[in-house]
Image (tube, rainbow, N blue to C red):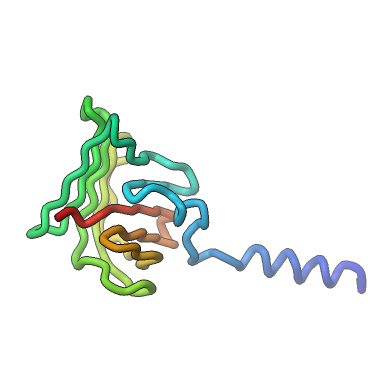
Length: 130
């Protein structure tokens, strides 16, 4: 039993760590990216994608040149401080629509931000275009 106790503690610690934290790989992704449950659904490529931002509706869009692959993010407020919570809706090609998602602002770099939903395991990043 004494030998199993440290192993059990390690397993419990590892299983609890990061449940609410964004995937570190996601935080190093491009400034326009969508990940769902650990898989990258779409990541910005300037040669193949177009992005847009509507300031009045706080809506961010990324789509490929054929408009077959896309995602749309609408936020209730713009991210201003890391660690704060923001609600929003997201839809993407092949994935449907998720409304009222609670995101945590994981990172802000200039006009780019990374949002993470621990409940939905959805990460999305975008840039406020000016």
